[in-house]
Length: 444
Image (cartoon, rainbow, N blue to C red; front, side, top):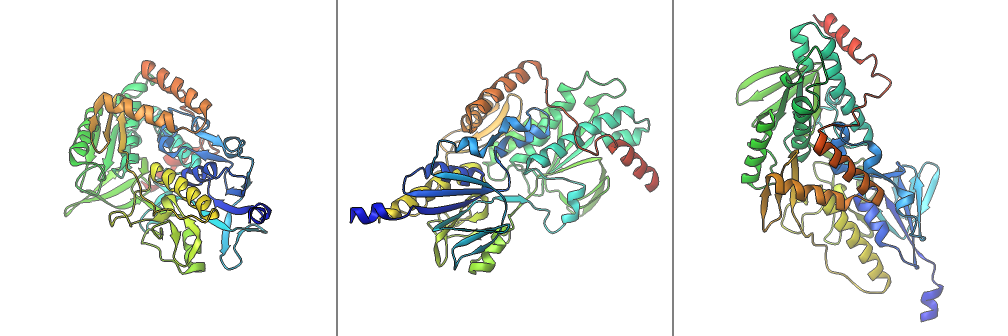
């Protein structure tokens, strides 16, 4: 029997997606009797929780990115393929990538989610979301170009529009973005311009519900709102965005409809599952929720296909308390490690209990020296919460050089309030002001 096991070919595991879920699965599957193929359309892992700091000029993209091949270089049973999976054949047990068909014994899909405009996809042109490096660079371009354009603008009304920043969505991303933009305007850049006073900028944070940070305890939401207001952010809850077009954001508060003239609108209001969820539903008849997330079994597999697993933001797991787990990095990490353990145990003829997520807390930063942290047994605000937030994010950065660079950069920023990554890049950067001004003149 031992010889039969030894002579068996390695178990072929294919992982689609190199985010937190996929990467943590691959790292935990370092085993002699398992061959792992990790497929991603990017050659790097992105630490998304700090993406807003790229968008606001605190960090560079490389500071929060790690090459997948480098991270997995010591996992000799793992190979990385650069490409995009567009289809799945569950009967033949193959994934289709370009002209290649890659076989699997176990398939793990961790392709995450993207921002959702709730059926108003045309809004993306006017209000970019924040999920990729390109999104962050585009946001950074718009934010800093707004100040440059205001510096040259002579019309007071247009200058006011350039200095108005609207962030839609009061979750962690929206709170962090609004706080970071306020710090830029009211502290970091207040001495950098000659024709404008950047402290006259208006930062608006719009949230449809009755409070910010809905997943947090009510007292932490209130503290977050107070901290943002102290930074100079105008918070408007119970506010629905009904239209975004050109430089006008239309909002509805109760029965009152108003318009906000803003050149910079940033979207942080919702997410939807990656398109691979729909493909999986078509091929396996698995159900998806309204956001396109795949409804998974208690062990994160899908119904009738025990060798196909969905983890991370793409998974709808509601077996713990009747509500789907949030789309945050710790969920994806734990699910990845769980599925890796399950695969190993199955190969030994063993079973493992259903997946159980251990919630070690939620946290959001509001600005320098201010954050809110809910550890379950303890709730923290202010400077202490900010220190906890900082240490946790440093700890979970993937590579040592990222940890070191980010620590040094944060230390420098803390004592100088300078941000060294305030670069305006992109092929349209030079013509952005002129094009926007010409459009405004035509509209008039």
